[in-house]
Length: 147
Image (cartoon, rainbow, N blue to C red; front, top):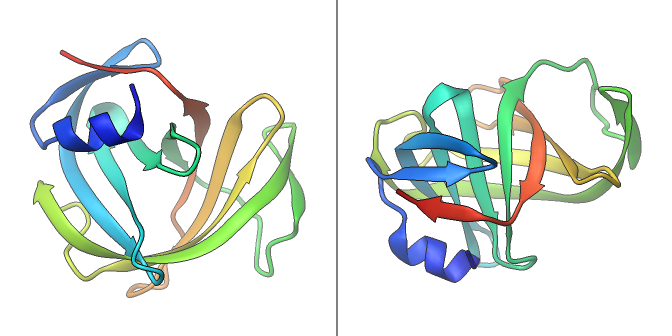
């Protein structure tokens, strides 16, 4: 499924199939970047998080992890015995939410994203208001179905 179609269809309470897993959508958050572009982040059942990337027309499916990588974050790093290359750093603000209030409107996050050659994805993040780390690890996915 393409990101634009996903954005038209996604809603809290929906059930999706991604990476062979049937997951419920608990919250949908529209995060806005400084340049006015945005991404959709969905908090799912079983601790999964799904975020879209309109630029690559793909999605990342991740779960929260604890890692000991500290700032300043390097351009290349190793996690879970895999080599990761830095993709980008970004800051975004939750502009619109629906569903559970896992993330609240107006909350913001700064994150540094990495990818490995096998499609594994690592996002090192800081919740701006609390200063707490929130790191996610998973993989890039392309196929999403609505149940």
